[in-house]
Length: 251
Image (cartoon, rainbow, N blue to C red; front, top):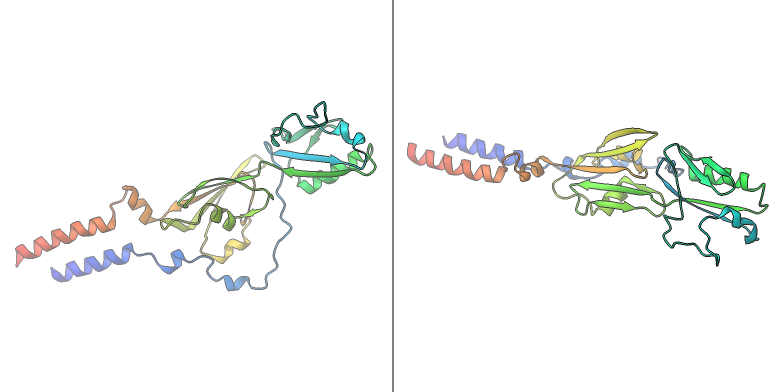
């Protein structure tokens, strides 16, 4: 009986311990040494994005017809920058002053800037166009220390950066099962990312897109804490008491 009790206790202890492989980030990162870095990432414009478009020239009188929400003194009617933006409708279009309806869905900011510049050059010789996605945000939930919705100013954020914004994983976060949920061209995509693997840096989900949702699953330990699975330490204490009682009674 003593041998059985000791064997059981050892098994439970081993079962409740996390291994190094489950905890350490970016294992085998040496394999990435000297690999070329993709620095050309640009977000693709999708429906419901809000674009902030500025048109400028040396002669500001010439560009006035191409600006929206201008008050009587030349100041925007509202200070809310999102209300001054152009909402991409469900068809992927925006309505621009003078130029009318423009298709922007599926294009990068740079492409839209160039297309607008080409069209506006018919009216303005020295036109300068700048396009920004002002509602770029990602959501991080699950087993992180500070879950939430994070607005990204420069329209470029990686998965490690998003996890860092959320305060990193909790001790109960499952690092080899990070889920990224993405809507692209009207299709919802779900990917499972192993944060402990260096392959993270080569996955298409390394750079996050606007409105991506990142979910960190709880580990088995975290699930046990929720009460759905008996907690090992509590179960261990109960079993220890029972076995001790049995040993005393059977001597």
